[in-house]
Image: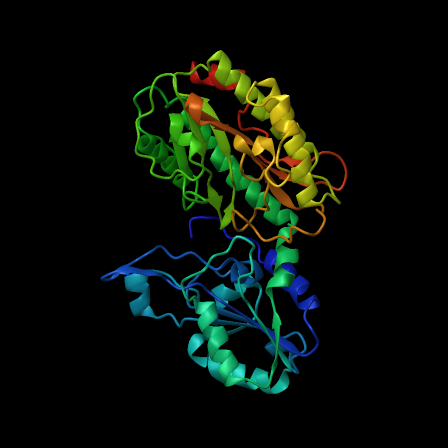
Length: 430
């Protein structure tokens, strides 16, 4: 891994929190992700399943975590199963976790090779009444590929039909949405790497550079700072491309007078950051561009203040919509009749701001969190309003990552990333 090793104390805490929520006499199993084939002998880069990483720190394929807090013997309560390493694997694939190294990473003392998994699991099932299976129930998930986790669940149900079944996901949705201080530090580190990439761009972007050249500059800066690269597929959208919300082609030339919308961010140690900035390709905003830019900035700043304990996500978006409506009236994009005659299910402001303002973030860019439950301290949210005007051939979105605080305004993890229009112009023209 490129990142510095994380202290295993974080994963020890995370397991304790999860096991405290398990039913009596129950087992939970978590699987690594597959390595996905492309064609011939090619594969996609490995990306660890965030749940097993959250609970163990193990960042390696073909790994399994078993938790059984009520096991009759102490050495059966936390067990890791790893692919057995050897000299041949070391030569062809590089270092894999040894049992001792796995303990250093995870804090788990009982480590078996994966070939022993079925034998050990069978013994645990003779003691247990319930199995926690790990299904993906994120509100944005659309999974068409059969995952390693899904194959395990199918096999387990056939092999042990008499046991009760419980779900890990509701527990993890609550636990992962509230970050430990170590996790906030890791997200902050990802944000700091993102800042370096953005500042690099301010001296690079000018008329006639291409969107993919901008992408390359960011990738260079991210990787040289121990990131694997982008936390998600980067959006580098010049001119009217910014009005395509998930524009990822990044293959056009940035033209004089255009704006460049950058929804780009680094990951660090599997933790995401999520930034959006919009900058003038020529180094100066026009008066109209700046007026819209500052309207978006005001919405972002006011929306940020609302992310406090007890806030309900759905009501929060209603209030943000009111602020955006006021700004759009001021810009002349809406008039009073538009607002008076609006459809409550799709308010007038949605013509220019059609997506949500905030989502949970952390190990996943769109992280776990139950949106019907009130916000809590140490939850991390994005704040990302935008105004999109195809008729004027530009769109503007601004996005920061903030931590909900026990008291006072949220803490902005991107406080050092330039966002004021005047500062961006100054930096681009130095």
